[in-house]
Structure formats: C-alpha cells, structure tokens
Length: 302
Image 1 (cartoon, rainbow, N blue to C red):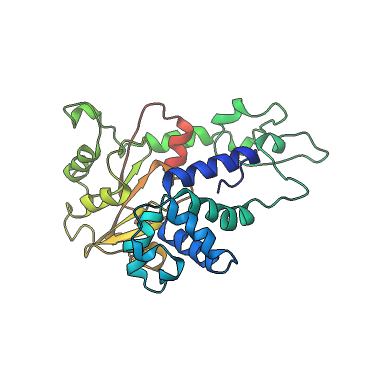
Image 2 (image 1 turned 90 degrees about the vertical axis):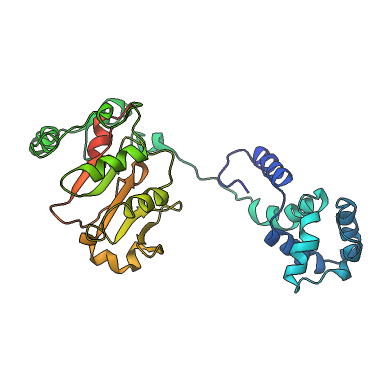
C-alpha cells in the first residue's frame, strides 16, 4: 500500500496495479487462505480463484483439498498457480490491504519545508555547520553570521590543504580516465602508508555494492593490516565483515572496540552523521566527482 500519498484515488489505483503486475507472495496467499476459511462463503469464493488459475492441479480445486499445514506442498502445487490470479488478488486487497490501510481520519496533518519558514510570532531557529546554502534559504529566513564562526570556512579549507594531504589525478591511475572500484583499490594498495579508510564522497564506486567493495578490499590487504572491514549494508545498517566471511552488526561486533584492526568504506550516502573512533594515524582516500560542492565535501570529511 502506498503510504502518505496525497490523492486517495491514485493511491488505490497504483496499489491495485502493483499487485496485479507483481502477484502475491507465499505469505500473502497464505494470509488470503486464512481469511477465506474464516468467511461464510469460502466455497463460492474459492471457486472464483480456481477459475482464474487453470494450472491448479485437480486435487486442489476444492478448498477442502488444501492443507495449509503442509507448507512444502502448498508452495509447490498451490501457491504458484494462484499467485497471479486476479480473483485472489482482489480478495486479498479487499479483505486484508484496504480495510487496514485506507482508514480515514477527520483531519489531515501535512507540512513541508516551507511551513518551517513561515513567519510566526516566535522566531524559528536552526543551525548549520556550513553556510554555502545561505543563498537558497526562503526569503523569510536570514542567516546570522556569528563573529566567532566567521573563520570556519577558511579553517576547514586549511585542513584540506595541509602538507600531509595530497591530490591524485585520475589519469595517473586509470588508462581509461574513469575512477572505478578496481582503480581505487589499486591506488589504496600502492601507497606507502596503509590506507584504512575510503570515503566515496564523489560517488565513484558505482559498479559494486558496499559489501562487495569491502570484500574485495579486505582480501587484498595483509592480515597484519586489517582483520575486518566496516561498511553500510543495503538496509543502511553499519556492519562488519570479518576474514571468516561472516557479517554482523557493528554495535554487537568485537571489532567495535578494535578499530585499529579494521578498514572502513563509506559511500557518499552514509557519510553525514557517521562517527567512528579511528586511530589518529589512520590514512584515508577521499574521492571527488562531477558537481561536488564544497559544502558536500566538507560535510563528508568532517
């Protein structure tokens, strides 16, 4: 069900199309059978299901022939032919989806970023670590330049321009002029000081998922350099991949207290708000990319 969509008619239509094209999962078909068996017209309704599922075996063309406790048999012989049957999809939406999701309330509460900027009796205040976006603030919002914070931009730029930091042109490490995962790892391995952190601020690693990236990296470095790799999985959970190829959450991993034995890969989407207590002598690679703003670069690094 499409949650939070403003137009109810469009939400209903899109929900129906989603189920009609995608079909029902095994769990959804099982839930439909449970609801069917509790109704007073189970036989008549099931006959409509059978009519829309010509591939259903003869033994299961009556509702009494379906044994839901035999999960393997249901998945093999029953659920498959019924998965895309329109009648069971209609039954599932009418009896399970819509009664729960289409509740109406007397008042609708909605807001947007412009509501925050609306002029009020009491001022709305906020904080930002950078001021690059001050030119696109709503007209009712003004940025106050605090005197002690005026040198902040110069200070963060000074950190990037410190002598221990260096810049590598992509053409020096890639023959095709494209910085991909392979070239990035080759550069990390070729540096004299071991690289423990890769911050993909410029979103250059596109061909690999985060776990695939750290898996390649971890098994290219020596055991003495790293015993585990830290990354964000597809569910945006901070995880640890160890050398025995097991993946566990960072908070419950023993490596959470052994950061000196870990390498870290963070994609651009996971940089802001992530704090890891890395050793002070850790060396990092930061990628740049087209359209990268100073504001985004600063937030990704600091």
